[in-house]
Length: 346
Image (cartoon, rainbow, N blue to C red; front, side):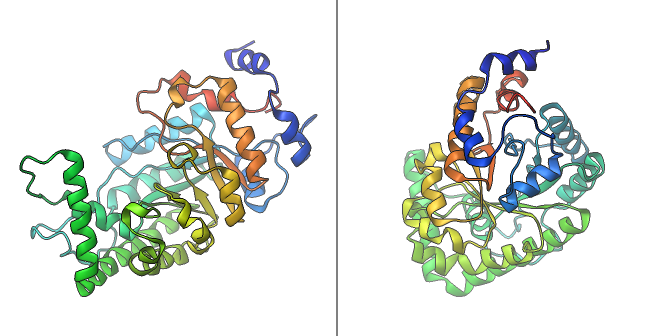
């Protein structure tokens, strides 16, 4: 008996009864391929188990090393979806003014090289998706990377000062804001087009401003929504257009169906918002349910209970995953706990 068989036998089918009853799983199964499993979950059809994925924060690397690491990670942990973490920053202009940017063929040429290598390595046996920031999120990071006078203020006060200045720029410089968001959006779309030609199955889009810290839902509608809609419109012919809500407040829940993404990924731990609450407002596929913050301290049994509970709340359109990157200091044994928590028949 190998380590994984031992863990599974020890964990048993803790909590699986409710899932078996709800989705008609259990007993003898034909093990599905990664692609079959993801396709079924996206369509709300029966699966042998929910598809799953996990990822670490991006690490600076050459495209070849980046590709090697992602392929090795998938082979080791047998994930159903490969989320290719993009370590390359959006290129800033050297004018000293963050908003003086122009449209480019792709902001991430090295990422495209890595995607080509990953696609070849996976041989169409596993869906893989690129990761990018939404136009608003990119603008925030570009603004935040500018040198700002710090003086004697604390880091928290500096962050709030930058945020106020950023929001003031949006409100007081309508032409400049539209110009920079247009350049970022079109450049992002150019990149997506090239990524789709390579063979990605979608894109993991990080949206930072679905929370009151960046404004009310009306502010999202004014400053962000038109550009996000264009990004997801370009992704409408892909299977896995995922909106990763890095931040999420309850006030934004009614807008979930308006974001234009068929898959929503978020953290139940950071937001305090349950999967059931998301399901009330969103009929598409929900990705998440597993504690990413303390992932390296969770047992196999605890992780199993988390995704089973999330699956029961989400229904069949569900992908089990941590709500964000798991701790980078996680050991390979700890990273394998989610895989080890999967049903014993898999």
